[in-house]
Length: 409
Ligand SMILES: CC(C)(COP(=O)(O)OP(=O)(O)OC[C@H]1O[C@@H](n2cnc3c(N)ncnc32)[C@H](O)[C@@H]1OP(=O)(O)O)[C@@H](O)C(=O)NCCC(=O)NCCS
Image (cartoon, rainbow, N blue to C red; front, side, top):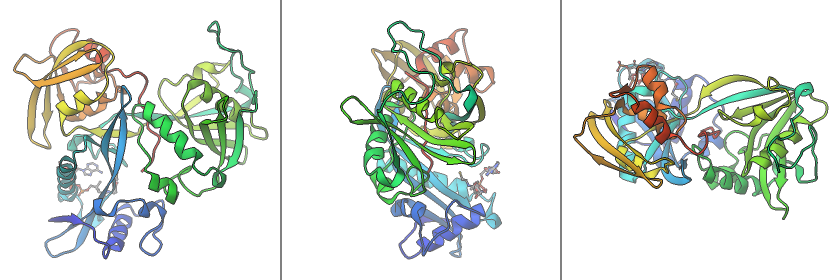
């Protein structure tokens, strides 16, 4: 099996192979590419070929920056366009491509690898674990009133409708660089968020709002007129659907939510991407107003270099843990002492008795703070060697807020 980068000459073959693997894809290629395909970094697209030269598999990677807890930004490889022809499945083609990509990631100095999984059964064996989650929240308009905030000193707000002139409605095509700038400010402070390379915005490749698809955009501005949040939405029949609400501050979210919830001529408002534990549900006057559905994993994380990854993120509680980590795909097994002082971690090899034994995929799940280690202990995936170890791990791994990613790639 040969795994090699796609050349300009055989990029059409790459596109055709992905199509054949999926049977369908969000975008049809147009003369060797379309918007989604043009956003790919050609030198990071690989083809898997049989010994007689038949292309049977594809994989690609985007060069992203991922925000870790503590507002640390690290280079991350965003795996995509993974496919193997139906005629050549379960013969190790994907396994070979995964090894190739992890080796390339190490050469490039990327800290970790992330992906969105088409099926939850595929990537655990390669060391990836689900690390962020997202859900849809639907609200009938007649239940959309927001409660007055109960904290003393918090400004009172009208229960529905836009209360001021800080929200402006633009068409997608009119937004110029506003969305890109606001998104960039948002993602730097949101654990789990990915950068959207400038090329994506310039090409308008991807899903709305990084696409030419018709959308309205409610842009919020601060007191100086500087955009500090937006909600991109469409209205179909009686439903207003918000693709994404990107804000730099909770009060801006409330203002934009109030705006879409007060929209006339709709009977239902759907927020497509709500992070776990988002305060919106608590803001409704009727706690049961929001109906949550489509609760699902989103970003999967793989740590090829555990001590480097643990030292990179920010931490919020002092403490120490001995972690015994198994990485069956890479054939590695190591034990580390993780010591956290003043928000920083030191992670060094140790032969001390372990507090927790875990597979690297489970470390990927807890790394951004979106999955509590104790949940995986209770599920039987992480072994706690002493009482209280899981509680310590929960306190240590927790992030400043739920990690969330709504970028689709
Ligand atoms: C998913 C896909 C790429 C797997 O490719 P593949 O070459 O068959 O994978 P491999 O042969 O390397 O599989 C390695 C192992 O993973 C398992 N595996 C692979 N895909 C699996 C799946 N979809 N469900 C369950 N197990 C799977 C294999 O059974 C094998 O297990 P084993 O080592 O115990 O025998 C291929 O099935 C495909 O193209 N699917 C459609 C497109 C798609 O979903 N792509 C992923 C986008 S995120």
